[in-house]
Length: 185
Ligand code: HEC
Image (tube, rainbow, N blue to C red):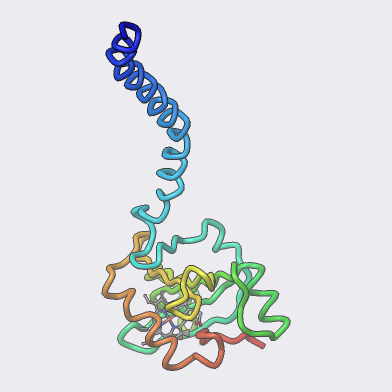
């Protein structure tokens, strides 16, 4: 009888200690994963990522190959150049649509400026916007597989502007995988 009573008195404390040790072990085991998850989620909430899509400016786009130049009439009145990463260039050259995941297209744009050396020549003035399209067919299911980003001075513009991107590309360029620009001859 005595030993049973002793057991009844000590067992809740023992159970509590065992539970505490288990909880501590679980927390210590999971801590690195929580940190990893927090770090992995960081970039999408990055201040330099576009709203809705989480698209950022690719670091090396100024070295990318030209797909085609373009001009925009007033009121924007701009010079433009669409460039692409290697996947984009390879896809254009192969002439096969849709663009595969990993394709990145960047549209650079500048104010028009008269050449100081030659009156009839127009050269790029100050940069206005950098616009980016990233293909990820799983992540961007609702927008034809494309994520969009428009940047001014390296900072993304507001969410309202990002809501307009796909609608226009879908309305006018759906048959070319939502991409307007063709490889310049
Ligand atoms: C009203 C129509 C319209 C809207 C809205 C629009 N675009 Fe475009 N986009 C175009 C056209 C037209 C081109 C072809 C190049 C040119 O004329 O500048 C283009 C080209 C592009 C390109 C180069 C690839 C291609 O499709 O030719 C990118 C990148 C791009 N747009 C990103 C964006 C982003 C990001 C947004 C939203 C912030 C956006 N666009 C909103 C019409 C639009």
